[in-house]
Image (cartoon, rainbow, N blue to C red; front, side):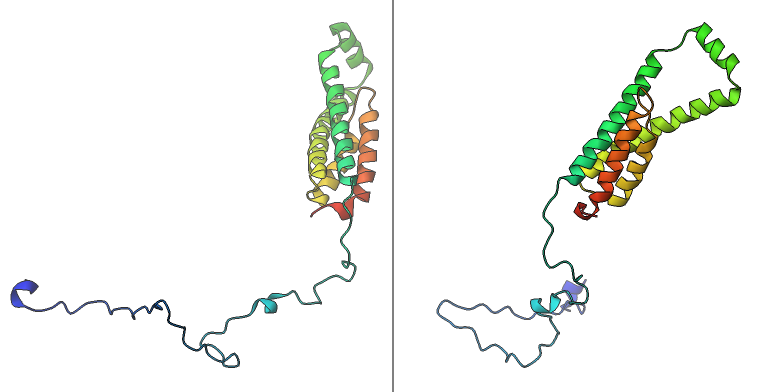
Length: 183
């Protein structure tokens, strides 16, 4: 209907300002003076430096890379593998019915339950020791690696001590490797 009456649409968008291009051979006009502030304040890259109060005084020289986190990771993984192999060996070599009967009659039910609980703690500790070993090998999250190294002390093996002893050495090396972790 608007076409028939000859009226133009009243709601048109305002046109954008024209874009100016330089022709070959033309030079650009003068830039505004440096002391004159632009319409919008734009910081310079040199204004993005960290304040000196944020920089710790001992960070003048970066630390040389060390193999302590990798050694801690290997020790924690070995602790987990020794504990897993002991748990698998104990699961495969089940006692006979007569041996189990003699064991349960000679000990109180709380002793049997306590041994089963210790076995479950050992299984969870093996998983945490393995996790801590992988994280130490990647130099990630020292606090979680330390917690996993502490749990590796509860890892049992074939003779019930070697997994924990390897985990203890891994814990000591993890503590010594603190400065070489990324976080």
